[in-house]
Image 1 (tube, one colour):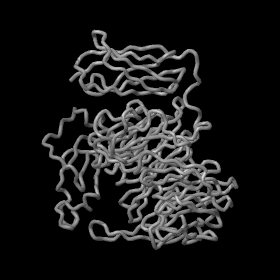
Image 2 (image 1 turned 180 degrees about the horizontal axis):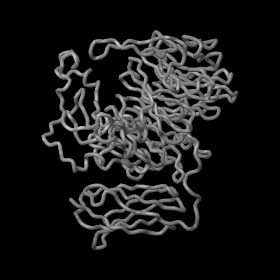
Image 3 (image 1 turned 135 degrees about the vertical axis):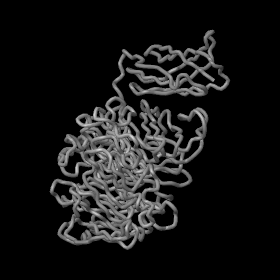
Image 4 (image 1 turned 60 degrees about the vertical axis):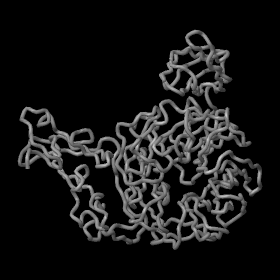
Length: 633
């Protein structure tokens, strides 16, 4: 071989399992492993040089070149070649302190940033998000997942939870069978929902709750000394129809024990305690989701459009109202002092009525974001038209703006303020990704600030920070993930772990993230209760109101631009007047704003000629501000 030093094999098993010529025989058995020069089954990398031996080089350099020892003593994510996988995802592996080329060489190994701690294989697609919860009272958390009627539990170190000796044999690319530990704790003979975990009998230990397509609701008692978990007395309970959605756990009657709230596929909502079903309520449509707040339940169902029901702890209907859209995703609720705000996204296409909400600058919306209060009133500046189909939203507290609304939308990572304006530098577009489910929050690069992570269909975990910037450690290399990642401190070391399930039947546990102290409780809670309690929005109003900033984006522009401004010290209504260079008024715009929260107003310019225009913002007692605007057509 040319060169000298340390050589490292890079093996990509996905190539072996592929089928380049489509004849039904994998590439390994067809001897087609090296057909794609951009992605070979196996290649050879020079750790202390620049050679990638899957490529052709006719120049090996000279002794004085910078890539020779002692200049090149590292092989890592940012070297050439590097330790990233073939999908461009980081492994975090760094090989450093490589010694001079000799018959015996030395090196050191470490991880740079987040790295894979362990992975487990079950052989069946893992389509739902994993659940992180404490099951045995040892202070460390377990990971719960399900697939094809099997319920799985791993300990924090990747070992199976119970004393069983189950294994699963998987036929690998060369026809041999490899056996893996199979961490099953219960087997069902039908499809089951995503599990949730909570204490429904008040004994201080958690149970695992789920339902199935044969109309049963199950409550299992975790016990590491059993081969299969036992059933809580009185369970399973029988519903009227099959179940497909995960249950919600919430102490709805303030008795110190979690109750179960779950809807079947025809919209019958059930509330159960440790003894079984206590009441039913017919929502008259397909269930969307539910949350529990105090001694009431807020449930959303899909009829012709969405409909919200507010129920007491005894199942009494306290209120109901219609929503403007259908094709809804699971809601999240924000409780801000005495205000209760329901945040939803819709995958319904269309346009908003004139003068309502926040329209797209052009084209038809492929989805909507909107927020309503507990009385069914849509909040100012909502609904917001979206250019792509959104995931279910999550929310996080913001010390300046109250809260932020975060979701993915196909190739976008989106973040919005509570007044419908996008957060600065959002949405962020990833043209080579496709996001199927909601994002999660974690301190990705351990800088003390919360970041947004989203799993891509294309085997990568993407991370952006609150300013819309991609993390230096992004993306991570994962499998084909079509569900949200789970975040938790599974080993009780004060730092977060990120758990991702994949279509290939592998669960990935990534380590070396920051603290969990600023992550919303509902995102770390296995009860599936999506409620965030936040402080009052913004700062108190004062007599010293002022305009913090006023600008438009994009600038220059052709047909549409957004005027963005922040007013501190008061809430009210802003007026924007646009003049041409001769002083003639060409547009009058207006919109409401909330103290210390960014606001945007759309300006569309059909019939406006190219040129420089002047926009004047009048915010009443906060003063005025003038900017130049360039129209280029």
